Amino acid sequence: MREYLLVLAIAAATTFLVSGLCRRIALRINAVARVRDRDVHTVAMPYFGGVAMLFGVAAAFLVAHHLPFLGRQAVLQNDSRTVLIGALVICAVGVLDDLFELNALAKLAGQVLAAGIVVAFGVKMLYIPLQNRTVSLDDTASIAITVFFIVLCSNAVNFVDGLDGLAAGVVCIGAFAFFAYSYYLYVEQHLVRATTSSLITVAIAGACLGFLPHNFFPARMFMGDSGALLLGFLLATSTITLTGQIDSSQLENTDGGLVPAYLPLVLPLATLFLPFLDFTLAFIRRTYAGKWWFVADKQHLHHRLMERGHSHRRAVVLMYVWSALVSFGVIALGRVQSLRVGIPVVGGLVVVAVVLSILTLGRPARSDRQTAR
Image (cartoon, rainbow, N blue to C red; front, side, top):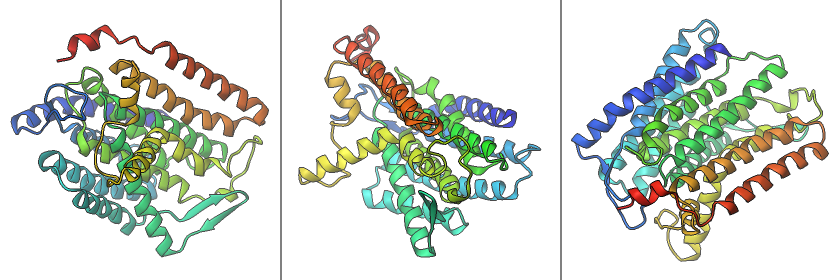
């Protein structure tokens, strides 16, 4: 655990320090988010936060490869290098989009390319965990499901990146939840604790923590598509290296909970619950209106929260609360020995979140009013 904490600190410190440099470069070359009708920000904001996070993740991986605990695992080193190459590609696609506003087809091609790279080097879904058995995938199904899942996660995070600090905070919470589950799973099952999934998720969490001081309201810079696509890609690959490469039917259920049958399948969806929900609602909404799903609008979940009277900061914090509730709530349901114990606990957390949402309605923060232009 100490080495994972060091990796977390390295990712956070590197991202925090490099963010200032990336911000200056973005301003110098005019890589800024201009104000559009659907946007919440009121002044042009520099991009390249995703580039800083890529540096943070790369530094974390580099340090991990030289640590006595993590550096001894050949599979971890090979998979993390592969993931880093794919991350570099998808981050570059995001940078090009931030600079030149690529069309949807070009962005999709870049995402598929990044997914294809990791698949070509062996990071792909091998199993689908189900109750009491695991479905083994053939090569065609493995490649198709892996590429689809990576593209889906990348776009889901991109959809939720609409308020200062929102995407970074939601992904950070999901990464912490996934790390907690994956690490505990390997401890409980007496398996090697140095795993690719744990390394990726702790690096994600560190990069997000390092970027949030620059991005939380009022933001000084945005992560841009380079950051949103990068975070979605990394979360997807962390899921694949755990859920897709472990035969959950061979794991021992030591506490009578829902592990190992359902959690490896459900938790990845829970950690990205809000992005997936926003993505699904946008797809349905735009399709019903006769538009392409990638045509932007101003009806995302965070837009609706602000329309209902929440301030910028409160809307973000509420989405943090709901993200943590779903992510850690699913883990709680899976760890308890009886649903009769777990359901009341999670139900109580839901009530708290609902009450908090209602009580903060119609009370815009003073700082929000002062910074509006």
